Length: 450
Image 1: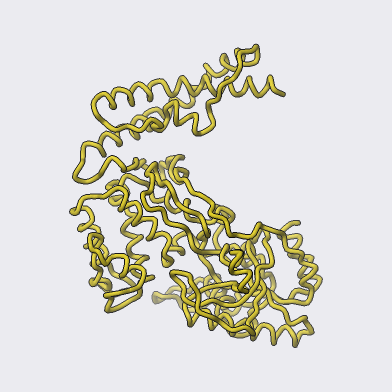
Image 2 (image 1 turned 180 degrees about the horizontal axis):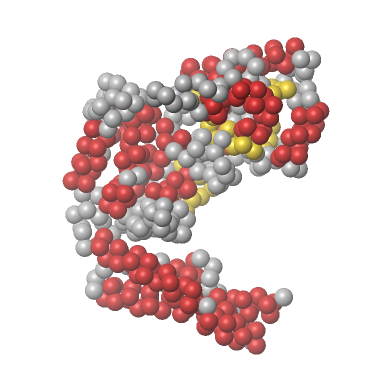
């Protein structure tokens, strides 16, 4: 086995060295010219070591054979050489524009739907700050006679510090605050907290849980109700504070020019939001000392909310213009803050994290920076999750039949019945929980696996 590993590693080393040589040479030349190219330039020797493609191997017959194979491999990698060189040259462009970017800037990589760059979405570093209960499987048999219901949640992780985005070492790292992990937060478990939202939404969900208990008892159940949130698509997290906090950390680190920030500020002010032109004309701007008070507390807003303003801010800061100006790729930022357990799965995934609702305890004021009120509950466990229509089975199908053919937002169009059904299961006040008899438990076990 050791010989095989040495063979494979030697092949990787030789292929990597062949690809890295021109990159190292170009990087050396740029440094001689005064351009601050990092030692771990993308595609160079140090970068390849960090990616695990290079490692010292003792000389042996296996290693010599591996080196021979490795000499044949770079033909494939060479196809990507222009992209690697372009990334290095972007560093030069950043350095030659001191009024726009400082040396702390990273590298913006060209990335389009038709020509995606495989590195985009992978260039980030985070630190797990702890405080989250280990994942544990649900024992569905324990919940025979209970009911299960759902509501939407964003896909943010929790207690992960964002240290680096697109090779930008963040000066003031932010820590993620949300999503499915909220119920699994050890402090929330101890305090019987399952969910956070604004006061009206938390109260509504708590009342729905009370109603679900009543319906469960009428069916001869145990009077226990599980909450299994389903995920919103990417972008659903932008109302929360984390995307904005991390984006502002990039601005603090890179320090773009006043002109760049003023232009982006004007775009926020002029944006049309929900049909209202210049809804956030009161936006103080990215150069203002009161920026964070407005974005996180809503100070100085004559209309709208801090959360909706944050959505507009992220829309503008994730634009191609902003990404190029700051030297980063927004997918790197987004993947850094999302929950790795769900971020690459289909949206509307239900059941990754499940807690038992305890609505009799009532809602309470909480500490979440975006959502003021907590709904009581206690973490139960995790599953692989499934799309909400599959998870809720017959209940979903029955609800969907009532939503087909309803008028849409434009004349002559029909509304999306699945969107309406998800809304019904997330907000309606009756017949919104799935009763877990033995047949449903057997079905869920087959759907979700062990």
